[in-house]
Image (cartoon, rainbow, N blue to C red; front, side, top):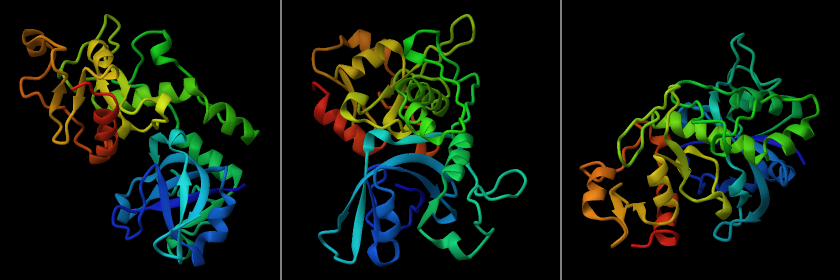
Length: 294
């Protein structure tokens, strides 16, 4: 097994489904992608992909042929392992050195869609990407289980990183919560309220749209910041979100006067300005089909 960088682009002609499959031509990349099965890859988006740099990590589950095109194949990604970086990592560090050893500043292998990388390079990128940022929006509500703190440190033994850190539920929950709260500026997306306790800690919670129990990824696009009450209602299917971001309320579940107090007057979800931080339609579709009791 070998780790790699997969290049993503919002303008790609390939049939990628982010977080699910990575589409690639066999002739150029099959020998490389096949080596990543069972291991982790980092996603990188350059200028054509929104210029995000290194932005997420995920495990490759298997490789299958494209049934519609014998010259192409799919890397099937383990959806439950997707983890957004708290910090998008640029191609070069503050000293001008590339995070991928031997990668030239421009040209050559920079254009390669799949690049195999060493454990050391992988660790360095992940370490920077998952460096904890605790600002006023992201600090935990309290010391209980809903916002578990997990300080991140890359030990010298990379296998420990892979198994203890990247697969740690406590670490993933804490990072996911910080990122969702920050994306929504600690404000409930359905009520519009920003409540803080006496210590300045936001009362908002990070809700998975597709829950972890259903292999929902720890990606901001699979999250919504909600108050405790609305989070409880969302998890139980009493509320959901329509395609146009309208807030859906299950019939006979909430009295009209209560709904008027709980939700925004427009009954629209308040979303981040940045498109890549907004709820993805595939996750909202899942919630409506599998959780909503409307």
